[in-house]
Image 1 (cartoon, one colour):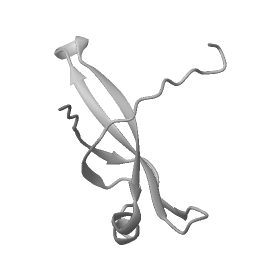
Image 2 (cartoon, helix red, strand yellow):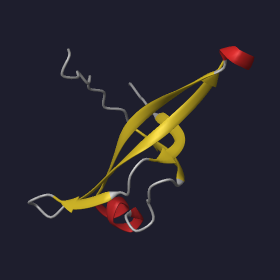
Image 3 (cartoon, one colour):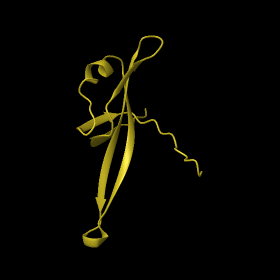
Amino acid sequence: MSYQNLTIVGNVGRDAELKYTPQGIAVLKFSVAVNKTTGKGEDKRQTTTWFNVTLWRERAESLSPYVNAGMQVLVTGEVAVSPYIDKNG
């Protein structure tokens, strides 16, 4: 048996967008920024990791009015990873 789970706490980057598939299934998409601070004093640095979040079906419909840019959220769920390659490779 295998199992994966990710928990993130961060701020919503843009208002959630609710759409429906051709089969009528609700899909809610939004991004979450997670900030991490390392170092001390002048060596203190902050890095931001962005996560794209997708909710499906009833959960998507019930949460869509509440997920707005800037609000802090806690998200748990499965991970689907894909690399991002910018125009410079």
